[in-house]
Image (cartoon, rainbow, N blue to C red):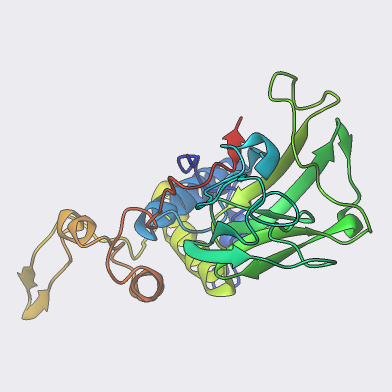
Length: 270
């Protein structure tokens, strides 16, 4: 199972409440400062929040890698009334389980689709090229895996034709944002960082670290943080912003850890 590389942050709104001069800057300055601040904070926090939407085409159990793992006896005549094993082993979230139920119980969850990555939000869902109303599904999490649950009385397709395009009949496409939802603290941190970048852009005094280790003049000692040292620590040099970075990425990871399963094939990205 493959997962997409982070395509960059999207829909990362900033909170500039603590920047009283923000509205005095031109749209060009605000756009440049916001783009730079969001891009840097996205990298420093491990690219874990609200990445750009991707198109995910799930693949159900009928068109994945076959019926899954089965143990002896498999399809041996006379073993059971149905001509097969009385229990069907299967892999569920990395755990081996036996399915031996009947009636309304089922091994598979035909009305749920698991995601291969974390999910910040679901943008749209199309089946056979037709977009579903958001009231037809909801985003859940079970055993730490995000799942899209169908709640309108219908079930998701058990298979789709990968030869057709995402807008054609036979297709099943989920457009979603990988990552975690951006918390309010992230919006505030991005707003404060963008504010300081905007100040530097127009040539006014700002809190961004400058290339100076120390300065003594008229009995006053001034020390500034070397920006190269700050960058090596995975920080910005702005106290409040760095507090938030440390709280969400204390190990200074470049990106969130990912696990690839060789047991199940869930689909492809386009």
